[in-house]
Amino acid sequence: MDPVALADQIEACCWTGPDNCSQCLDRVAASQRSAGDLWPTLGRFLGPLRDQAELGIEGLGSSLLADGAGTTRDRLFRMAVASSRTRRGPADEQGYRATTLPLVPRAGAPLWLLVEFPAPCPECRGTVTSPDEQGRMDLELSFDCPNANLKTSFEVMPGASRAVWAHRLDVMPAGALTLHIHGNQEPLLRAEPGSPSSVGPQPTAREPTLEPPERR
Image (cartoon, rainbow, N blue to C red; front, side, top):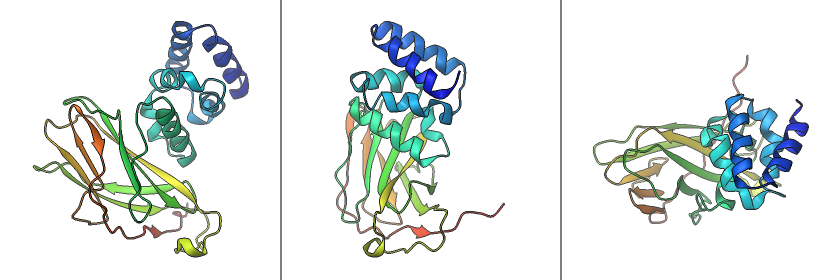
């Protein structure tokens, strides 16, 4: 079945009720379709099926956030916000926002860390450390745009968009977790089991570096 026909089928199924919608999504998830095949289906949960976006996140699996395409991560992030599974945190002075999925972490349960930031394209790369004894994680982000000649200053990048970085923690620590970006001492994000994730004091983040894609 082609991607658009699959999206039509899912939309028709979900209009018949949440139980049927969940069953249809479970079958799609079991078929292990690629993120590209599911692109039109994800779009329906931002359009006519917006009220059922939470079912879309649960049924298709937030693991799609690990997809290599930045556009897929962006679409799933918007689905999670639309379904109130998470929310967009306030931006710092450089436009960085961070949150968790789910918004209220549970100790011992999986957790997604999400960072969105101004970028000339949706593709990005990140290097993040595991939580240390104090629950600190350090993140370095960079663009991964196909055009190596793009300017690094947002002031001369007309039409700059954003990128969404995602990282899955298999187990949320029992204590507090903080995410620090580009070496800042103040955290961009604080997360604690049983409480909504929050943004730390406004850090002075430096812009990520613009790197050309690796040649193959």
